[in-house]
Image 1 (tube, rainbow, N blue to C red):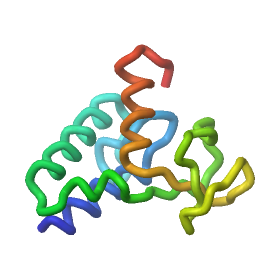
Image 2 (spheres, one colour):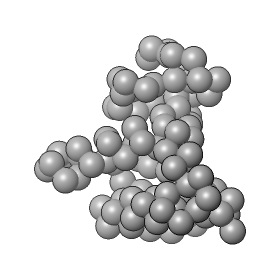
Image 3 (spheres, rainbow, N blue to C red):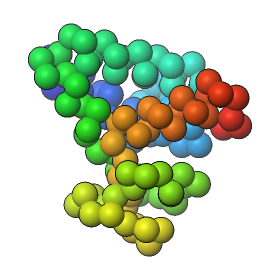
Length: 110
């Protein structure tokens, strides 16, 4: 059950576009509410799953160009630092959480 929850959390993270996450993985609409539900699910996972905090270090790859290319933990899929030229970018869950918090709670445009 813990692995299933982890994969669902990571699956939604891979669908992140312009600071929004879909409310459904299959043809869902990207909404602000879905972001907060996703963050809540991570909190519950960290609190309830054995060694749940490890998910915060899991990497999520993005295969497209985004305007968040300069996040401090920007790496490629092999965990090597990459500067603006990697076809695949990867961020830790905690980096994504920080970025989303900044965008949504501090009034940033999405």
